[in-house]
Image 1 (cartoon, helix red, strand yellow):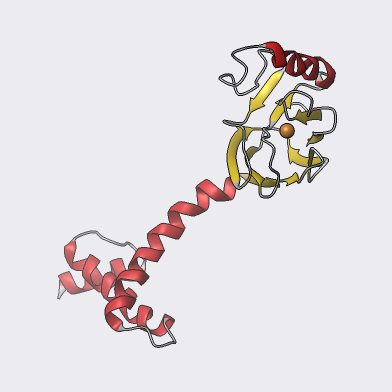
Image 2: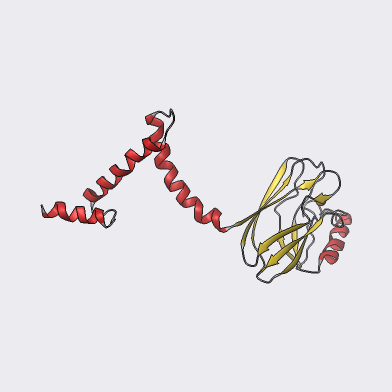
Length: 194
Ligand SMILES: [Cu+2]
C-alpha cells in the first residue's frame, strides 16, 4: 500500500525515475501517444522506432542549430559577383554560412576581412598570380586582416559550409573572393550590429 502511494506521488509530481517501477508507467504512457500521432497508414512496426527516435533527435538538434545565425550566399554566374552585396549578423553571434556555387564555371571563395582592408587584401590576392604556390594556398594571401576564411575554392556545383563567430565589435566587415582579379567585383559587406 505504502509503496503504491509513493510511486503514485512520484508520478504526480513528475519525478521520472526514482526506481525501475516508476520508470515503467512513464514509458507506457508515451507509447499510446505514438500511434495517435501517426494518423496515416504507417505500420505499427515502423511507427514505434521512428517515434522514439524522433524525440531525442529533435531535443539534441535544437540547442546546436537554434543558436546559430544561418546565412546563405551564392554566386551569380559569369559576372564575378556574389548574389548578395550585404549580410547582417549580431555581434558575437554564432554563424553558419552556406556558400554555394550553383552555376558559375569559375572558382570562388569567401574571405571575411577587418573593416577598411578590402583594397589592401585585394592587392595581395592579385599578387598571387605570380606565386607558384598560389593554387596550393587556395589563392589565400597571408594577411592578418583576414578574420574568416572558407575552407576551399568552390567550382560549379560545390559548396562550403563556413562556421564562425561574428566579430564582437559592430561595424562593416568586407568579404571578398581572393581568386586573383575577382575581388573588385566579387565583394560585399557583413554588417555586424549590436
Ligand atoms: Cu571568385
